[in-house]
Amino acid sequence: MSVENAPVVDVDEAAIPVEKKMYYRFESNDKKEFRVSELAIQQSETLNRLVEAMGYTSEDVENKPAIAIENIDGKTLKLVFQWCEHHKGEAIPVDDGSVPKIVEIPEFDAKLMDIDNGLLFKLIWAADYLNIVQLLNVSCKKVANMAQGKTPAQLRRVYLLPSDEEDEAAKRAAQEAQDPRAREVEEEFEERKRQGGNSFF
Amino acid sequence: MLFHFPFLVQIEIISQLDTFERFILCLCSKKSKRLVQNVLPDFDATVIDMGKSCLKIQRNGEKSKDLILWGTYENPKDDFTRTFYWNRGIWIKFKGNIVKCRISIHPTSGLPVFWFHSDHRKIVPLALHDAICKMFKISNKLQIISDLLEFPNIEVVDNFKETGYSLPSADQYEEFFSNVTIKNCASLVTWCSFNNRKINAEDIGPNLIKTNHLVCCNSDWLTEDWLFKFEGKSAIFYNVVELNNESVISLTKKWIDGKFPSLISLMIGLGSTSEDQNFFDKDKILENFETFPWNPNERAARFKYPSSATQKVDKDILDCSQEVDIKRNCDGLLATVIVEPFWFQFFVWHEPFAVSIPRTCKDPFTNKTFFEYGDLEF
Image 1 (tube, rainbow over the protein chains, first blue to last red):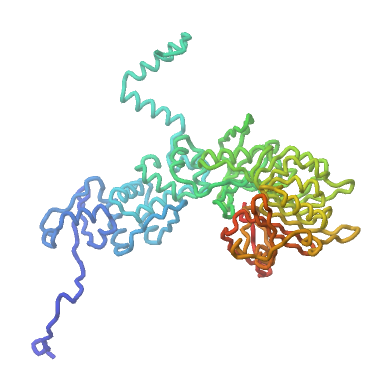
Image 2: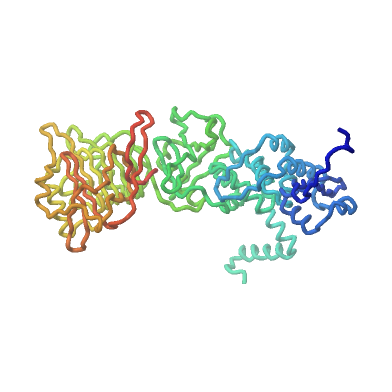
């Protein structure tokens, strides 16, 4: 049957579910552009609110400049959007407050996060900034897993934890940077103590 | 790395760490300890298990789980992961003692293992308990599972479950119980007669009569005099040989006269002696009292057992719907008296309509169902 001879059927267009296929454009701080589906964006509370507030039409998305994400680089943003596209449509988990929090890393996420610690660090920052709850859960789980079977010394190295002495030194340095006279005051105080005085004032 | 994350991310990571990993993190620095303290602990009490050389943690009413192990350099049994020490030692300070420990990680469980000289084996578990309570800001309730030889150097404990070997002489039992006060619950298993003489009830009296909940598996030392001085809330005495019909009649009369103000439950099980088998005569005992059948308007059918060490029996001994009550006039309290040839139960209804639901469990080997009473697990 040719197309011309096909029976004409009236269709109620409102009854047909319309699949949302709008793709938003985002730009990283190193000017790399990404196209992300509307459904994938829903994984990020921050981006979801942003695009809702913007109220872009399909034409706007194509014609207006890409939405800039100033503090995330292209390499990290690529991972973020890969994750969002893979998990689009999934329910956003709600924290039940249990400790230790039970989080399982799916195979896809494990492969995605098979990256160096520097990039993982940026990914966690991005997940936090963009408020992607489940990505934050799994990426934090990856960091938590690094503590397995570690002695305190090993854990210090893994998490780059400063010792008490280093913390003290950093605190003093921060104080001095804020108030250059702090050091002088401290030295004066020590001097008076040496001279036998009990009170500074 | 950890401290460079935003604070909420740090908390997220900490909340995903297992308890023993959070403990290890606390040992790294003061700052990391403060961070860990922002996450509520997943337990509210610790248990020192001397037999397993283990400090356990538990959430109220639940079974405890292992948190820290310990071993001594000199004990050949403690050979796990001895070669992979943390290269720095840590100093543990506790009540004037300073003990140097080293840490390794158990190869299969991942739990931290503290190593120290055997001279300190009765101090370090207490020090670890103290450190954990402070670290995670939980109550310092002291619960110990131990035999009496290995019992830590402490004079007051909340809950104590005796396991393992008995002390070699009656003198040592008496000395132990004159030195140690068990405030809430004592579950004692290995008391027994010695060839030369029994434990003298008078000598172990002062501390133990004030224990809230007492479970004694071997009670051949128990005398009428000692029992009448008991000030706790519940007691179970198995293998009693010195008590008879007159003893429980006197006890019941004393209760009617207003003695034993705290008593909630008393159970006495008779054991056999070499001379003859003693037993309780229900009619002879009950004829001394005015008894009433169960009145549903006065009390519930099932007795709510106090929070003592969990016991397992093959029937629901808390069902009092077929049993008789007595009443004391001074405060109007009801008590249910249950007498069987080798078993005497005395339940006081301080809360006549407290909800009491039967708990059962299955023996994994025989598949037999048991009723549990007492909900103090540790």
